[in-house]
Length: 379
Image (tube, rainbow, N blue to C red):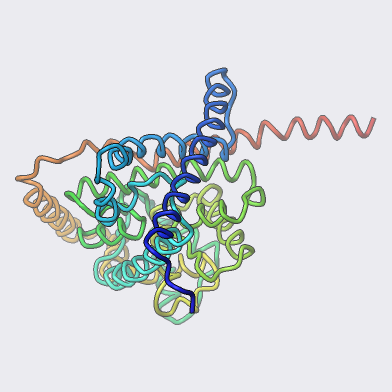
């Protein structure tokens, strides 16, 4: 057993820790200042440079409240209490290895409980189909569930075709409040506020991920270091504990392929990530299996609605409208007396379409350059 440290040794150790953190923060500010000058000069920043600049700006902003504990006499005695209430109060350079491990363990525990709740409730009140789908798409949806009901596995092409029928905003708008709370916890967001605030938080985080997806895809998954890879996967809800870097790169590559090329909505992929945690997670071998698990958990009512819509049942349409009206009224009642409403103008589907189109343009622009170089080689 290690001998207990004396009070002086503890104070000395803490002082050294914060001194090292201050020096590291100073170096980060120096590096980020150069990056800021580079950006102001009109040069673009790589993903790694942009993340470094953003992290430093956040750390400097955190330094303001943290400095009060240093400047005010005896205020440092309240620092442990403040850190308990506000875990992200300290700049990242002051975090110890133990703090990072504790955060990771806490996040993993939170995601296990949140994923179990999401999986359970998805079977009761899961995803709903968009009203703007063609007859052919409805038939594909119905045949997809016919295959599942017979105990068979649909093809990946069929799986992707059905997954495309769901849209980000539609998925989020149809989640109940308990599901929204669980999803915000799963995405490391604060589960406070009205339904509108929760949806806004999720949309804003997904928007950040959508932009980051394109940057990672452009630079390549292989360009990420292991810590960067773990952070990127964690942001997308991909399981990182007890997972090899090779598997993480594979999962992230699959995510990018599904999101950017197959046009699967990010919200659906986040829900798929929840199936990699908790019970039966061992049966999920790839993201395609997780996506299949999400779609398989869609309630029978949705399947029946799609099946009946093929027969143009007007009574069913009336019942659906009444159901939507009830949901709207319930949400309005919950938010009637609240003053912290937000104006949620984020349209994730539009951003995703724009991001995908941008990627296609880049590919098309690269093609003539490559062909030109090939022609030079031939000559």
